[in-house]
Each structure stands twice: as structure tokens, then as C-alpha cells.
Image (cartoon, rainbow, N blue to C red):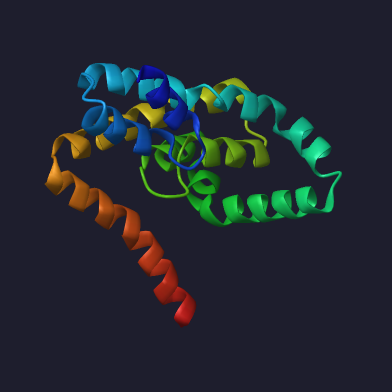
Length: 168
């Protein structure tokens, strides 16, 4: 059970936003254990992303689909990283701390890489953001059904706003 929480938190889509509710609701683990496991799992891949993304890009981009993927990924991250551009490392912390879709440690680390931020400093700010996001997600998860409704609203609202803006 513990490794499932860590693995879920390490994945780029779910991160700790998925790991904490699973650990609390499905596995019925103590909250403090879930919180620590989710933070550890969420942070595990981040030093590697920050340090080796350029090398991974070179290898993967040798194929057409790899070039298209990285082109899409980088443009996707650039669109959402205004706060990081405006506030630097503090913006990186805020970006990662907001537990919404397409924010989090993975996207934050890619944005930090693209903006040429120092690896260890970016890692520290991403870690702080992950802890803040973990607190928020844990509190919402502990609220039971009301927390699930709040979480669903938080998850759906940006998608809805994006859809509405696209229609104008």
C-alpha cells in the first residue's frame, strides 16, 4: 500500500493530488504517513527532471514524435508559467503549491528548466510548493464528501474556463 501512494505521487498526471486521497480514503492509512509518502513520491523524480531534461530531450527528439512531443510540452508549459516569469522563484513556489491540473512539481520543474533557473534553488522552491499543495490536498481530503465536491469543483473550473475562453 505504501509503495502505491509513493508511485501515484511520482506520476506526472496524478502527483500528490491523487496520492493523498487514495492513501486516506482507499488504503485508510494514517494521515501523517500519507502526507509524508506523497511528498517523498512527488519529489522523487524532480531532481532528475531538473538535471537531465535537456539530455532526455536530445535522445527522444531524434524521432519525429519525440520532437513533436517536446514542442507541445514546452509550449504548453510556457502558456501556464506567467506567474513564474513574473515572480521568479517565489512564483515557482506559488505555481507548484496550487493543486490544480497542469500545475505541480513536474510542470514547475519543466518551467524552471526552460527559464534557466538554478537546479538546487528551483528544487528547494518546488519542494516548498509541494509541501503547501500537500497541506491543501490533505485538508480537502479530510473533509470527506464535501472535500470531494470542493476538489471536483477546483478540478473542473479551469477546464470550464478554458472551454469558455476558447469559444469567444
